[in-house]
Length: 140
Length: 430
Image (cartoon, rainbow over all chains, first blue to last red):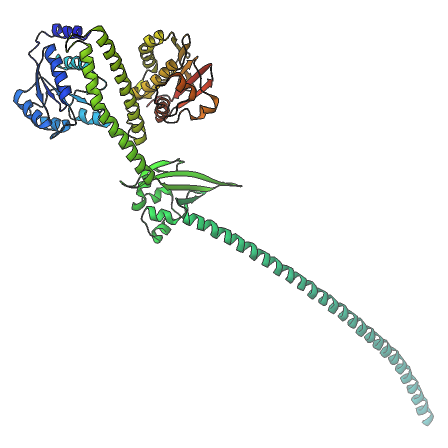
C-alpha cells in the first residue's frame, strides 16, 4: 500500500527530486528509516544529528522544509526555531516537528515559534510523514 | 343681802357641780377613747410588727432563692465558658486555617493557623476582624485569596490555591446554620502541599517513564511499518504475518502508554483544554464509522440514533471528547459477546447534550459498580472476558466529562446490558 502511496506522491509532484528536506534528529534508527523513505519518494534529504549542526545546515542549504526533533543534545528544537527567526533568509522555511512528546503546552510553544505542524512519532508512521510533507511543500 | 348672796352662792355651786359632772363625763369619755386608741395602736403595732417579721422572713427566703439562682447561673455561665474555651481551643489548635464570618459576612474570628499560613501577626489578624472578604483580600499578605474570591464570599469546595512554589492550599467555604437559620460562613484553609508534592513526583515519574518508553517504541513502529510495506526489501508471507502481529502488539503498547500519559496529565492538572463550539453529532458519526469494521468482525451490530430533534451546541475540547466516546464504544465492543448490539444515541436532557452508549454485554457486577470509575480498576468479569485493559478508560472519561462541567453515569444489569450516558452543558451564547 505504501509503495503505491509513494508512486502517487511521485506522480503528483512533477518537481520530484528537486525539493530539499533537512531532517534534524538525534535518533539514528529514525534518521535512517526516514531518509530512506524520503529518498525513495524523490526528495533530496540532508541530515543533522543535533540542533546546532542542524542550524548550520539550514543556513548553508536553505531547505524547502525542515523535519525537526525537539529533545536533542547540544541544541534543542525550540532553540533552533528561535534562532531561525533571527535570520530573514531562513525565517520562513516551513518546520514540521517530529517528537516523542505532544503536550498541549509544547504544541502551543511550537506554534508560537512558527512550526507548521507537529507529529508525535508513535501516532504517525513514515508514510503519513510523507503525506504531511507534501501538504506543506506543494503550497510553496 | 346676806340671804341673796347665800342664794347666789348656792346657785353657783349647783352650776359648778353641774359643769363638773358634765366635764367629768366628758373627761371620762375622752379617757375611754384614749384608752381605746392606745389599745388599737398597740394592736396595730403588733400586727404591723408581725407582718414585718413575716415579710422579713419572706424576703430572706427570696434572697436565699435568688442566691441559689445566681449560683446556678454562675455554674451555667462557667460551664458555658468552659465549653466556649474548649471550642476556642479546638479552633485555635485546629490543623486547618479557619476564618468565621458572621451572618452579615463580616469576619468574626480567625484562628492562629491562618496567621501562620499567611505570615501575619496577631495585631494584623485582629485588624481584619469586622471586614468583608473584599476588604481582606486587599490586605497584601491575604491577597492570594483574591484569586478565589473576586467579590463576595462564594461557596467553593476544595478549590486549590497556589500561594507559592512550595505551598498549595485547598479552600472550602461552607455555611454554618444553627436552629434559627444561618449563623455565618466558615472559610476553611487546608494545606495540601505535601500531598501535592508526592503526587507530583509520582506523576512526573510516570510521565518521564512514558516519554522514555515512547522513543524506542516509535523506532520499532517505524521499522516494522517500513519492512511490512516492503520499503526495506521483499519479505515472504509468513514473515509478513509475524511482523504484522508484532506491529499490532506494539500499537497496543502505544495505546497503553498514551492512557498512562492521559492519566498523569489529568492528575497534574496539565490537561489543557481548547474548547470550541462543536457539532457533537458529526463527532460521533465519524467515530462510529471508525469502529464499523471491528464491530462486523466481532459480529456485533453498531448503530447510531438521534433521539432528540435539536441537540444543544456544546463547547468542547474535540480530542478529549472523542477520547470519551471512543473509550465507551471500545468498552462496549470489548465486553459484548458475538451477536450482540451496541447502540449510540444522541439526545437532549434538561438543556444538556446527552450521549448514550448501550450494549448487550456482560454487564458490571452489582458489588463492583461503585468502583467502576476508579483508576486502574477492572471488574472481575471484565478481566475474565478480556485480559487486556488498563482500567483507565472510564477514569479518563469521567475526568474529561467533569472538566467540561458535565456528568457521566451508568446503569448495568449484570449478564445482560450496560448503558453509559454522559451530559455536556450547552455552549454559552455570548
